[in-house]
Image (tube, rainbow, N blue to C red; front, side, top):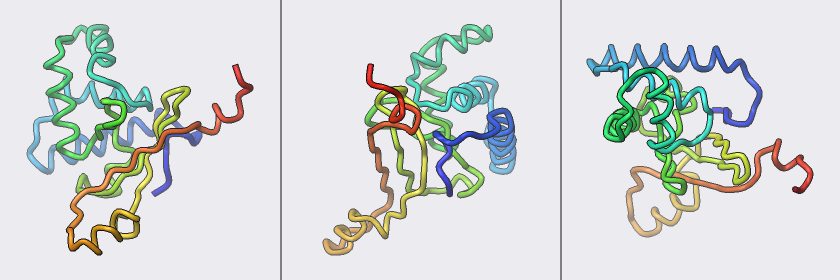
Length: 164
């Protein structure tokens, strides 16, 4: 899967496709895709960067929705639990899954490239069994169930920018 965070693309179509896929998945799995859950996913998709729950609250308030922290945290928990978003541990923030349809919402091994300057996050797949972690785990007799890689650096735009 190509990474999506740094490349130029039709952002409107990106959001529409992701929302359609999320709606279809929730319907197929009998999950309640409530207005708050839907709006939090839209916010994450629109921003294309990792956001904390408190970053999301003003957007909910602007829409006339409840802007209480538990509303955002419950929506984020639902999205993460159902493969529609990921938690970026390094930032204690969340990002919409770049292509949930590609893996059907199932477990996958994302690698997150985090720009330390602008905060953009790009998701790409990293095969756990081909990684150093997979090799080390195999030597130890350990079964890897989930690997998340988070790398910090500069996105292409920030890397090209003159030093401040």
